[in-house]
Length: 173
Length: 437
Image 1 (tube, rainbow over the protein chains, first blue to last red):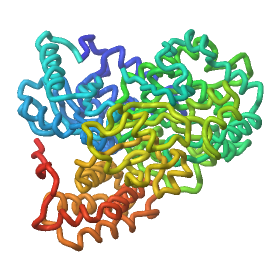
Image 2 (image 1 turned 60 degrees about the vertical axis):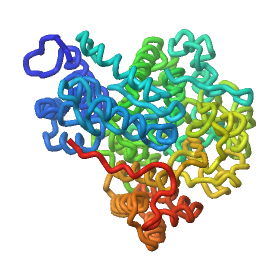
Image 3 (image 1 turned 90 degrees about the vertical axis):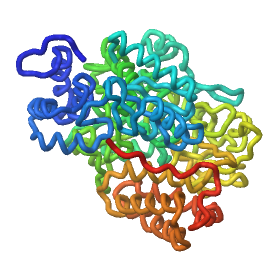
Image 4 (image 1 turned 90 degrees about the horizontal axis):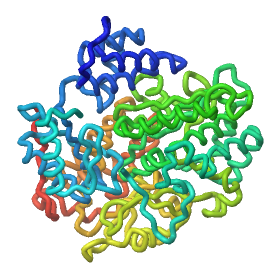
């Protein structure tokens, strides 16, 4: 999350607001900036909130309903907060063959949450995801955007422990 | 960092600059970078397309359409602007090759866009990456900025009178967007539902203008064709299947990895020699040769060359280059179910045969795997899948149906073993879906 003060009229940090100002000028039509804008906004705010939808709609000049219709289509976009570290375990075929389901089960047990759950302290959330493009290095998971590959239950423990430590030290994403 | 794996039979062409620091533009230039774009500029549109046809490069996204021919379909005169669109929405399960290209050689993608734009006289290109590949978006954006700074993009590129702008775009998680018409919808800021064709994108594409859409590996291959010569490139592969491709070996192998091998390389050799064979002394049960949508092959069907025509003759598809290897411990019903869960999740819901078909297939396969299925279910699965084929706007319906038909046909006995009262004869107990919070 950004610590920079917000500019008047925007909920985004000055850096992101400036990026969005430029983004809408790159395309033949402004609306082409919609999907990237929503994803980058989610990265900063944590999820696609009502305020995000309102500002993005205004910036592009479409209705909030138009924005909501698009949001509901894309699986990376979420309308409620996830944990600080969003653990996404792939169980698609290549990962499944090498123990992806076991990694997912292990995470459920270790974190004490089901698929799509968030830990009470808000540090972790867990999601079973479709292929993340790490097939030759499976089983694999992404924590936020970082890839973790060739996982075993033991190495997954280490991955979770490292993020837990990062959270305790007040570390960012 | 994702890295290429090598084997003595590998031919480093697309991977020529991998691991050599070519994300740095100066390093890229040192390694013959942007020389192909200059060559193409001298050649002009017609000669570029002729070279592409000579190379016999075929689309690396899965369909295997000849690239030169695709480019030649773009009308010379057009009232609307023309576009080049790179499909880097890599999402076909089993496929992880484009990631390596963006990570190790982003400028080859940009140079490919320049050559394609010169060929069809487009002034704008888009490089669309899947949203999950965030670190690659940063690499690509930096590469594009560097290319602008050196005059390879922007106004009067390479000292010519030609202008070319390139934008790096991110998706936000949708397999369907890897389909060309849904990709255009997404780039126009909409839900990624497919468009009916004709008209084809070469005539009416992005923003209504003529558009060529190529897979990232296809585009990244283009500069290498001009670097070594189209005829030389063609010779690396087999007839009508020029060059090399990045094969993604995954599943039950001693050495899974992404390898660059000549088109037509023997699949059996790929599994047993390149991939090191099946670990733990297990036997091979099946191979999915080109990503999850391609029909499964049995061990006795894998003594074939991996090119579009030979794999097609064997009853499957070369697809996206994702070779998934299954050992004897795999329950084929579970594997078919996991495949179908994916397509059911990714169906955009636009066409009824796909939306309803994938949902019913998932339900039927779940019932088979978890218990309670009856005789008729097996034929019903096949009947449903066969009725999805060719009845949707885009190939997602086919992608779900084709492997399912092959699973039932080739492993019928195993499906029958799952019928009521018998249950999964393999290890894994059925896992109920966890409750959503």
